[in-house]
Length: 104
Image (cartoon, rainbow, N blue to C red; front, side):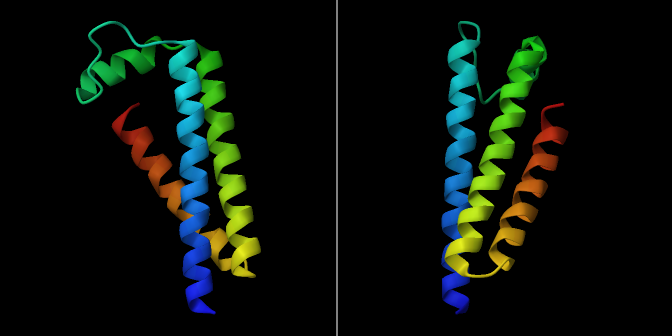
């Protein structure tokens, strides 16, 4: 039973992360970064994010919501319990807070 829940939480996180990555790619396609953009330079990332229009932020927010909902729902169904969904939700919350602190 515990292995099923661990596997469910792992799969749920992979699905949530995949959905978030797809929406990030959509934003990058719609609003491409400037030439010479270095994603490893945090100052360049902050400047790029600050230049994005509100529509891009809405797309990111919807993608985060869809990823969290989908990953948690699948984890709960596979794990046959709400516990894996809570783990996914908590993990995504912590990662979202960290992201908001690193890239304001």
